[in-house]
Image 1 (cartoon, rainbow, N blue to C red):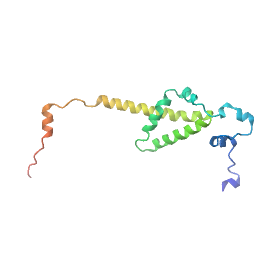
Image 2: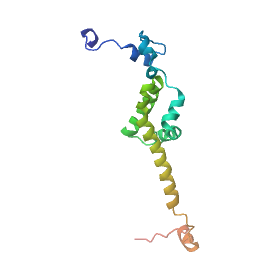
Image 3: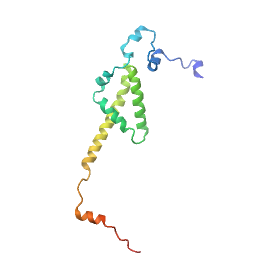
Image 4: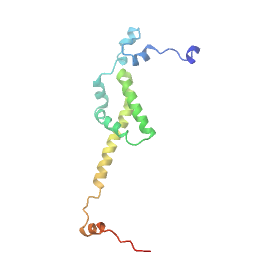
Amino acid sequence: VVLPEGFIGPMSARVRSLFIKHTKTGNPLVDSVAEHQATPPMLYWHYFHFTLFVMPLGLGTAFFGKSDAKLFLIVYTIVGFYFSAKMVRLLLLISPATSVCAAACLDSLIAFNIEALTADDQPPVEGEEEEAEQPRAISPP
């Protein structure tokens, strides 16, 4: 309905190249620009360092518990990684998701360690254990 009216034009060659691997714009100047090429895997390490390794663990924690924020994080990370792999310029799209996922992983690790350190690991006293095991008699009303 809106295409024939001219409100939305056809997709440009640059947008088509995000979805179709061998689409060229026809303009040699645009095709040769390094920002429009596929992202080499080494650039992920160059920009994200160790967060690249803890990010999948943090993304995994987003699958536990349902909330709109966690669903947004999952979708944003997956879509961001897809498009950042297509064009070097779009590598900036994934940086917020990588930071949040890495922080979620570190948060889970810190919370687990704090819970483990503050847990009551004291063995029960012998007299208290025997009292707890004996059933209580119910007195008639």
